[in-house]
Length: 302
Image 1 (cartoon, rainbow, N blue to C red):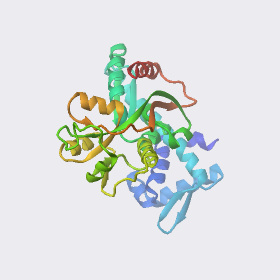
Image 2 (image 1 turned 45 degrees about the horizontal axis):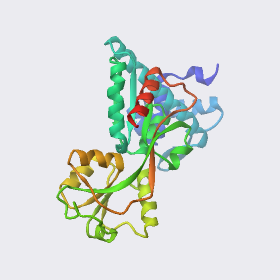
Image 3 (image 1 turned 90 degrees about the horizontal axis):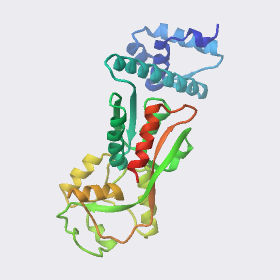
């Protein structure tokens, strides 16, 4: 009998827990099993598979390259089964289907518009939106935890086993609160920004890369006094409560300016632009709901 046929759901969850916790004692407590029994089960599984899944060392365990591959598929199966359970329970309550969306803060305007349009077509679908920066969202997409991610296209994201579609391309701009000393001034010089603290996106995010490249093109450096924030709500609150300056994508900045929450500072044009798009998994046909959502995103992006 193949080792796969012997695996049960709690075995899959145990493998995932071992990879995440990297400690046999902690996992034995989480899974309500004695450590000797856990060690015996793991050794037996490794023997049946024909390769070690975890390396033992003084501080615990860590997955081998082969173990990472097995855990990757185990995590995907766990997510799929847990998702199936939720969908079935929702179906019993009259909800037909679900859509898990990951959204970068730069895409909240098009995501909210597309979701509202989707609900007109599928009023009984359950939609959940998770807002975060791209790296953790893409990890959850690859592992099967969420269905699609909308955010900046570029960097390591293009190396993942994902489909993507560019929705729009836009410049980046500097913003501040409406009563900021620089608000309303025309032809602001770049040097004037050095008098104020900055709020910028975290290092490694696509929009931060665009900012860094733009500064290089301008012969500038990031001020020493800056705050990194991946939270749009926190960024807006800090901007509104201080004389800090922030950096947003053009569409998002226009939205806040229209609502008079922030103003766009009149600085020379930044040539660096960024593309926003939607990512979804390869080798897996999208559901009807996801197909419809993609269509609404394209419309909302025009």
